[in-house]
Image (cartoon, rainbow, N blue to C red; front, side, top):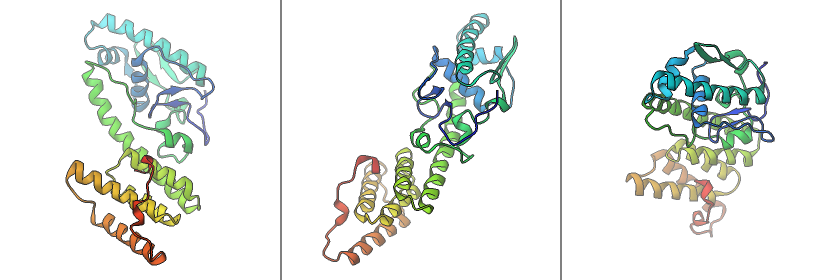
Length: 265
């Protein structure tokens, strides 16, 4: 019943590809709404939820008894998966209410690790949108809730990537820092602060051509899709990097045209 603690992949993943259990023995859920229910209970852990309210949110088109029957089936399936992966005491269900135990579930879920500093780096590089790819038709109340929570988790994921990037750079692991920075800008390509961070890392690695190609791609996308130019700080950094490169390699011409993989943007 104790919560998982440690620097390894979380056992319950809701950011990106949903998963319960470790990579060797993942537990599957039979119902898509099981993932929706798990995410809702995880985020709203401080409250106890009436089963009738959950049923109405996930099956608004059904009569109450039919919706409650569906919820009972989803809860049974979810409880079996959680029990097999993390043990008893995480999902608490009685005749009227349902909730996740805050103490037993703490640290098991990836959303808990975004600000704790305990997220495994490989998982962090793989994390994505909350309930990625899961859409519940006609569930307007749940959809409205999910929209707001996705924005909340998205900001925290980007912040976690940035902090881990800076830690790796400070420790001298520029290769890892670049991987984290690339993931950061792939999730939010209009974040010019993140783009500048990636450019500086390439500069520190002695790869000004890669840094300037990132700038060129950003400039091209901004012009084509938003009809704007990069921020003054981004333009100034690109000019600084190109100027430094020319001083080091005075015969080099437009080094920034070197090809760069798509993941660099």
